Length: 194
Length: 194
Image (cartoon, rainbow over all chains, first blue to last red; front, side, top):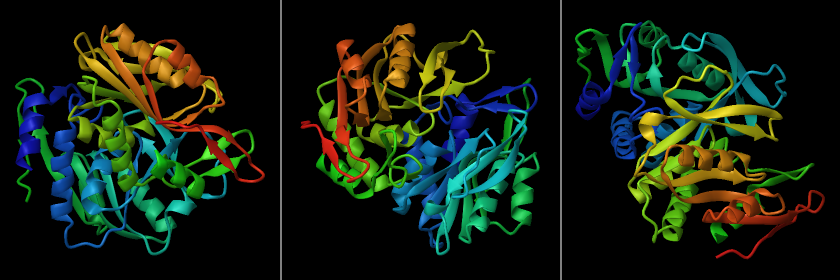
């Protein structure tokens, strides 16, 4: 998605350790006009797929998922991150390892809001090692729902997540795939992508 | 807002201890069609006010704020909840006491995304004791920005938050104000409200 790649080049900041900061428009301050274009593009890419629910994870996936949902005409459910161990029996839960935050947490979704017959599109802002997305896919599986695919705004193509998700046969659409980035020159190379 | 009050009566669940669960349409599963109506109503109520930024707090405020922002044509910034004590110098921060979760946490916003000249509308899903909203107002004050007002989806009118916010001279628009609710009969009384 050229608009998005241009924006990442313009406003993204590369930091040591392959960190790409896009918090001026994607995940702290949020450019809602851009979110609308992102939502339209997700709808275009998944136009052939039946979807009746979008599942995302708190916090930074929520805004993108909600604006995208307007183009799909479906509700959004967000998985909650839970640091406690007291999980009631009325939720689906799985464990996710976060490299960014260096900790393990449970993600949970109420059984009321995900189940058999649901055709679920996963949406998130970033895909790096893929643990969060794998966790969401696991919740869909636990619920007996159908996983229609996953839409990601920025995939770090040089990390293992994208390949791992694709290897599971999950249809993955990443709107921008960063192939490599150079902290010193500020150069970002994107993968040719639809 | 009648549509919202009707929805709360239909799908809200009253629990012991004055808990009102609306997680089937507002803060776990999110009805995006309803969010659009909420967004339009916030715009109608704040039509006379100049606003160039919406500020909310993770997680459940984000979806409502993003959809509302489409009607205002402004970006959204969300304050992050931080449980660590390592706050860098490039953020505004204040402490918030959560009665629901029985703990104290810091909320933070990057100084990059809030500052002099900003005319800020606060948006959140719930107002009960008002601590989160007071925290957001404090961040706006720290940043030297102007607080245009606060838009709340559901105010618990029998708790102190709404009065405390109004007493500070903050323009507060709550789309539904619960005056009282009865767990045994399932009755909810709303305050007459625009």
